[in-house]
Length: 314
Image (cartoon, rainbow, N blue to C red; front, side):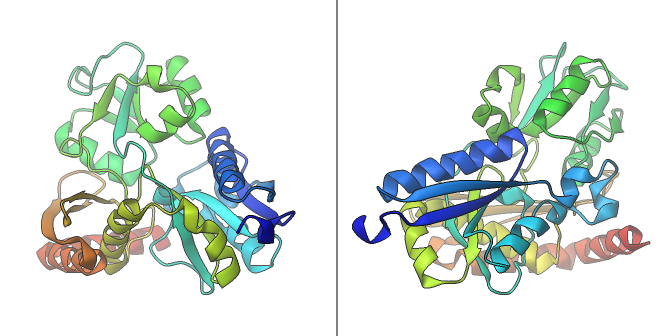
């Protein structure tokens, strides 16, 4: 097996942020270990999402972080692109697939603050920075007294602004902090019951053209249980027609061949929260995700998402 890949070069498209580069280098090491003799080269890129300083929701959402990477795949300049799956829209461009989903890291959100030990310990009127509508919705639902301010930038930029006193706290993906060896900054890992994670949070996905050769190369990196959970979460998001900037959350868990999926849609002001749970056989994960999406839509989440989409389009 290894011999037929000897001296083959695999080009990995990635963003230039430290976290994105860590993820791409991690995939490069995994590929090299699975296929001795393979040559792996990183193609770091600056995306439109990296250049935008304002709100992603009004600019077009987190999909802006992947457009240039996908263009490189479709043009043949890159063989694979490495993403945080929470940044991926529910629908991929024609001709592209998620060739492998790596084993999920910690899916939880992390509460980070200089002086406060937990989210509950934040004083009334504390300033918390986040650009995520999903986090804003759940924070405001639990703590309507908090002042939510937009905080953009990579992990290091956000921590620097926090340390400078621009904010009292922020919420970041625990997996990203762990990967950057910044776990010491985490004051509290928020249980899904406190804050339901983003679809695919904690999962590194490898996108590629839908071609047998490259998909075969990626097979050793695939983690079956993670893929099952990811299929359920992404099917839920797809049924809602949600983009990455929508206040949508979902988290699937596997136990003994059974899958349990929780899904949420919330208004950015936190006043309306539509949440439900579904359980069933793991081998129909995507069907369960779609069914949960339909159930949440039936409670009025559809009107909420339509209003948000109309507002973003103005």
